[in-house]
Image (tube, rainbow, N blue to C red; front, side, top):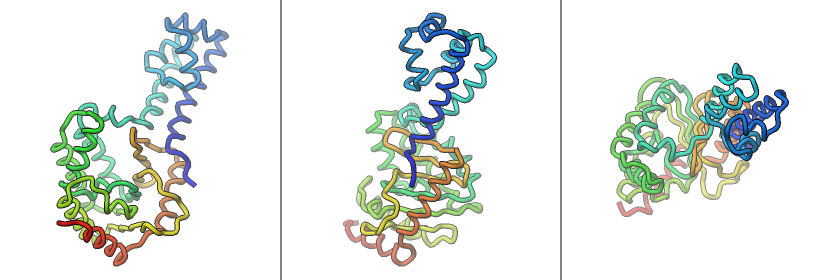
Length: 283
């Protein structure tokens, strides 16, 4: 069964902390002495060594200098940056609005051959219409209190979605049935979104499955996740995106996807679920 998406990010942070604390012990100095040499409070040394506080580049340089191991700083900084990129807070990456983060992911979408997407709460981004995306991104902007560039972000999101219609990309998409009913936008926009899903699911490169409310499950509902080939899995939580690149962890998510696929309905049965959702709308 899938492990927590926080585990690989936390494990990477703990590995950095362990290497730093081992360096201190090899230097034969106490945590207090290291704090004095670095010019910070002793509690900071403890927080870094216990992976409670992520060290900055400057912290790592100071720590290495205090231990007489300046030559190890560059490798540790690189490893720390990799660890931090695994768990990125939405407010951090949206601090200048959402357009740029969409632009940064375009190369990843363009080079991915096989997308496997599980959505428990929203229509996946590459299948969203302009109206649905606008309602969603405006709600996120309001909730996070980040700069409003919704119109530009929607434009870039739709441009990024060209991969569904261009090139040799394959899409296996699973949505929980509740996704078809959540009002993240106005009813007319939701109706158009559902009609769009009905059209796009007929494409030969798209497999679209709906996991019914009453399906017998071997995997419980999970956080939404996007698998990009076997290169990366992006897991979306309320506060952050967790990027998984460790092969074993990726394999676990792909195994969960395969199990979830067995609970889904496809073709005419999936279209019927879409029709039922449309029937609850006034538009």
